[in-house]
Image (cartoon, rainbow, N blue to C red; front, side, top):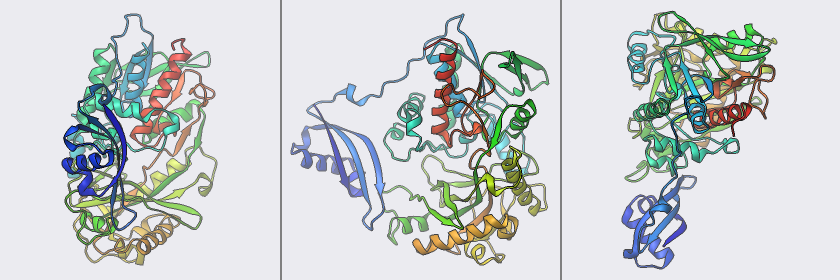
Length: 524
């Protein structure tokens, strides 16, 4: 027999198995020894009050264990038929991988083209960015198998529940080796140390079922026939031109600026999209724990490292936290030599001594003059170039300030220790950033400091710059068919197309685009 139950408990009750069973036995009025197993279906932390509480949705197995009630149904991926129709998937990030898996589910053979390297081979190139400032434009934190999320955190939280099944996406991750806790936690997170193995397992599923995955193949152009997209032209790592025929799911990510330029040259409809730019702020994790768990003792024995979500408005623009990484690192995330970008990540245990988050300012297309569809992208690039030039060296060593000095508008005489792997040097970030961004950030930080005592601290460091929050371009598509509004056969997909914001929402969008493609060729 199983019994569903909603509980609100103290951390020491929620995270201790025996005490949890005792609370369930009391709530259900059954002997604790009759409870053979507890499935946690949902878990969230409520830290709004001084007493932190944990909300749980559980299923109690009484007098026996019902395995059927505990199992999520895996997706069945069958081997493709020899005459299965083909579809081209450009990009092996979450949108591309989930599109490929959905195509297999529907009986369509995916041919995945990835400009970068496999997820293991990427590691050497990532290390070279930090140690030498050497950026491979095709293999970095943005490009390569797994996309930008593979080595920049693996957070799976999304608000895009109306667009598709978040549960299906999470189940597919678990099916390929992710920790089942992601099915439970309100803010699921795999971690950059665990996600590569999951990504490899997805690739193996694609190949074992008869799909193809090609690395080191850069898509240079679309093939057009009778007004339709009929395939792509690509160049492999040896410089050989290769033609691929079939409808195209374009899932190239928000940093594939050469793809945007290629599409613009081809006359494919684009439009500028609002973005958010700013800085990454880093605090000692112990300080964040004490602030957001309302205790000078920090998180204690049971609670995980505290995270936060901040939002305010300054001069009619939103300023908010982005990609908050408890127990994490700051990383150099540019994909182009001569530019500088920082981002954050956390390992699965969120076990470092630092907490970092992007704090970014909303920038709308009307804030930037002109009618160029790529104007927001060029605005991003300008900021990234300015920060790179500030270092004066051919490295990714980034300018930084103590948070208190950033608000005051003065250079820091010294800097606290930071997790940023490429190193930091003193700089006036409020002078490097566009004025409209810097002034709003200063106002927002002052506001956050008033709301959360201790947040504005000389122990906190601000590092620039955070610009790759989302795509600066939207590749315009029809909402029903998921195809480009004027180029049938082209399915703009995921973050790079301007229709997603993170791993989970990109995966959902990939699933939807694949479904629409299959329907368009007569498969349901």
